[in-house]
Length: 134
Length: 401
Image 1 (tube, rainbow over the protein chains, first blue to last red):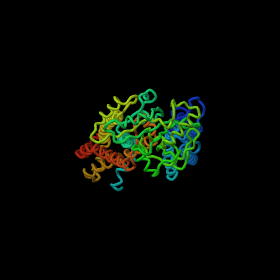
Image 2 (spheres, each protein chain N blue to C red; image 1 turned 180 degrees about the vertical axis):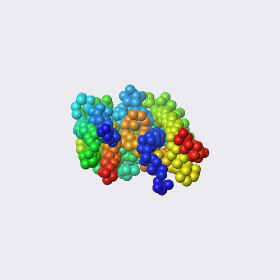
Image 3 (tube, each protein chain N blue to C red; image 1 turned 90 degrees about the horizontal axis):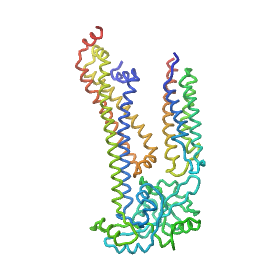
Image 4 (cartoon, each protein chain N blue to C red; image 1 turned 45 degrees about the vertical axis):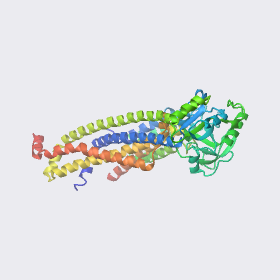
């Protein structure tokens, strides 16, 4: 039976939460007239990174080859860093701390980014160790 | 194999069981640390609000309540403006028992650019102000010049930058410490600057409902009552004798906040208690089941020469390791959620919310960790005592039968 890797499943779930969240509960500010706020790009970044993360997570869940797994783990680390940097660095956000993008989107990205980094680092250590033992 | 490394190896050999134990303790730590942090932040916020609003009574126009709730103006940063004629000030000065008196003038800025929000601009009479001036003095030692402003901690402008209010560029000369209230989103300036901004707003066609000279208006008057006088009585005197004003005791404003704080705190405390009792019961059952499952393993250890004390010590060490790992995980998770989302928590609760300092957070974390380790050790104690009483020969014979 094909072995399924738990860390891959966790990363897929985190990626799905990120992609869905960027369009729902983590969405950035929206003006009353429906026009785009300056922080709209941050939401797009999080959504795109979430979709890329789903592919990475599925790859880590199903692919057994060590070299590929190590590369995917490194990519997941980069995904975590990009998630942390998306609101504020990769894309501007609003200035006032009372704005939604500052109160919800950025903290949400921080929590997701840290969890992704922890999970990706764990997967990387496990994949590297398995290679040493083999 | 070294005896010291046995507990670690035992835990590593059963990763799922170990992960579940750690998860359970992490849940306890999350509840205690997260709950305590929220309660401490609320108390800290109330304390800082009491310190910042150093007046006993705030007097506002009688019609102000129809425009904005004064409590939400001070606590939640709701912007608003209301005006009364300056001659009310002289009438208030004649009320018996007043030690200090200082007016303030309010103005709500317009939404300036794509994402900025309106901020409350407050004009202070620098010669008489005893409310904000002591706090301004901490970051700016001089008197505020024309167009100079001092901003609250949550206004995104640094000292040296300028903020644009009604097409007027105002240099930021100081930034105040956080209070965890609506005062953190306010902008403070001199009365002259505010009168200037009021004129600019009126020139832009903004209807402020002021009749006459804007320099002859005030929005609120802050009063300090002389020692020996009853604040409630002075408040009543003002409400009876000075027409078209409403005097509010700041203590009453705080009491509604502290009532809300008390109810939020009691809910959090009960939730923490419920989580702890439940998790402790689960831990006791889990350890009892675990010991039952590992009876043969322990019997072998006894036959290999381990004393009862050493066996009990091994079980306790395993529990302590799980407690420490779970405690650290729970504290880390709580910090990861509560620190970044503090703005959202403050906005949702609608109460003054100010995070304690790093030292206090570290002390809370240390206490929670110690509690988690202690509880895990206690939960394993009963199982360890039971274990020391069993005869290894009988257990191994039972297994073979």
